[in-house]
Length: 566
Image (tube, rainbow, N blue to C red):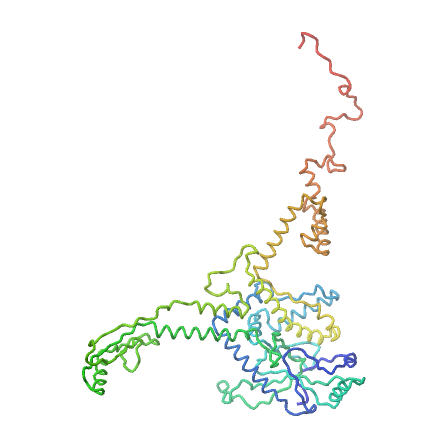
């Protein structure tokens, strides 16, 4: 058990040896620390934690089978993963990565190979759905032990019910001495406690005692010992929701457990109430005269068997048959009446009067959707629907829902980050120390398909352009162009530089007219009249004198005609 299965990525720990702390590292992934008595120590008792997680995951999977919950999950997954026919659901974004173009191209190629190994483009919906429901996902990275430089050959999905992360604190006198030294306030060296970390994989965790294999195969062995797997050989991604009291990872469905149970009970109660109160029932008062009690009961049974409704409806087959062994839905009441009464009488009891009220069902449906983070307007059958109009008319729930999906995508990206790290280090593209620097600048771009975000952005642009049109007469008097671009159009420095370059190039290429010339044309000033215009005025056409000729009419007055002459 001392040797771990899988592989381990060695790091340069020279710096980490100098960083000491009596507090062990906490990765906030629900894994608790268990004290062991040495490397070959005793069995680590994690049954309590494992069983609680085991039951939680099974409950989450049962919840996902409920129609309302399944519909909400599909809305969330369809919003987070957009399966386009041409584009991949997710691409790597290296714009902010401080590296050469050659390294960026290598990282892009390795990320593409990881998606092909996972078959992510095809199975993206199922992968994200399993992660969302279970709250965690595990993959075993399979490599060629003899040729690790070839990278990951295959990834295999591991059921979360069969694996658990374990961290063990080795019992060392140093740790106790650290505690005593701190309490005594003596300035001495403090050493970090040693931690052993591994995954415990139990292949028979979900198998029953009498589990049978396929036809012709032997039954599954229920006595398979757990296997210890090195942490670097496992890709683990969780939801980020942790119950710190019980040290258990929670699913996004956890906060909906109560709402779903309430909805189920209300629906069952409604069905029972309607089945029991819907039919009208009759009360038969049978006159038994002065008969003794035993004789009266016998007489009542004879009358009841004589007139009782003997037809029974079988819901499974849809047949109506005569069977007295089954209770009829139209079961009547038979009551004896002594002499002196009003004789035999039949009274009808009305059925339920408020069978059409569904307000309580609708309330708990909305409560369930709110607990799942899905807008109430997306409930199937609701007449509200979302509005595709102005951004001011967009529901606030939709904006919250968009932000929730963005956070969920960010959390799920840790799956790609871990696999990409392993692939780049094994192929000697980067070192473990380099990856710590580069990983902070790697982003993942998911295909976005949210109409509300587009409508919001479009509406904002329209509003800004309206303000610019109103300010335009005052530019140069009260406002500057720089102020309008920065504070009204909200353009950043980089955007201003890029836009100016693009506009200059487009004017130079003749794609766009020069705005100065267009403005002067609108004011009645022609380009020919401008100094250095494209066209020079024609002297003959304008009636001006040509150089070298004398125009006498310009200096002498015209001769007046003599009297009598026309």
